Length: 390
Ligand code: FAD
Ligand code: DHB
Image 1 (cartoon, protein in one colour):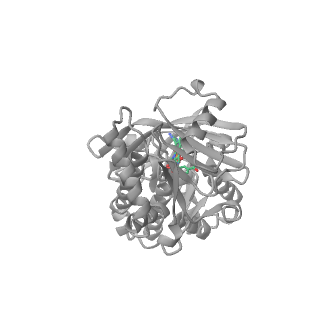
Image 2 (cartoon, protein in one colour):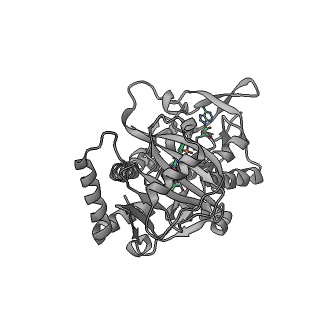
Image 3 (tube, rainbow, N blue to C red):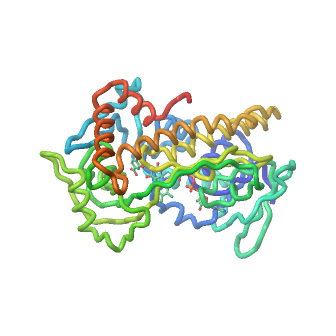
């Protein structure tokens, strides 16, 4: 098989890149290791930045998001038993975020590709890439028990943190930066109307909690836990009790309902540089990971492929490779801004194991400052809704 751009991975990055290139008349094949059902059910992020919402609209895949997504104008930070609203839209010239699950984004993108009749192979696992330094790179993949080769002009590795793209970079090319956090998140999806109408990030001496949502009838809640927390130790009643305790404020109660799904996620920061070697380009989680406080992972993945899409279209139209040459540096400017923001939100809100009173007072002071100084609140808000220029 042969195509122009071979895309490994049908997560948000790979599917969006496929759509952007389709709209510009560039041929792609998307290879995905898992089944369609698996990809469409994988519950992850939920907050879309304004720029990402606009991109989905322009790409013609935003119709259901506009109908069902929940537009939010603020978030709250809670500490010392009180909630403080950050009026993000007022602080950013009217910008908003949209709460719309990654599952729904994925379903919309898959449906659009299937409707266009373009190649999207599920259960097609990339096992290697070759000839990266030539004009005819190729992806070796296994599909239906048979190993096959996809020849391309360019390979886009959108295959997530554990994919083969990054691992196929020759030794010595990549520089890596990482940090592990000594905690994780226990997340639940519950069949109950959200008890809040905007996202709440809560700092307590028992650890962090986050109140979010997916729809008028589905709540998405998280608790700070150990990075290797055993889910068996968390029957539903214990989860609700802990959520109640970590989000309590006077005159408000947390409505409970059946827990439909629960899982534990570890937290890390990771960046590799550069995002290109020869004809192989990395995008999304294949190249970088942020801890989820700040809701940047999915948004960054889409911003990467926006740049990669523009660069490839320019190259196909005029053989001008200046944007391809600039791709890695341009992405990394936004990546590092989001790495800093995500680290800052994470360390401000989570209780480190063995935290002493000094740590807690610094966090409280920072939270008071962010919620009382307009300059600080604006800095948080403009990062949260997504910076236009980095
Ligand atoms: P992915 O979504 O990981 O997609 C990569 C795709 O490549 C997958 O479909 C995978 O199956 C496929 N693939 C991998 N290897 C191969 C191969 N060899 N061949 C073919 N296909 C392959 N972000 C937030 O902002 N908020 C959150 O609450 C949040 N929660 C998260 C929870 C979890 C458990 C995880 C893992 C991530 C979470 N994130 C969250 C991050 C966010 O979901 C990611 O940043 C986003 O999915 C990145 O999109 P992507 O397309 O780059 O990668
Ligand atoms: C959600 C996830 C996040 O990481 C976050 O910071 C806010 C909300 C969510 O899943 O809704």
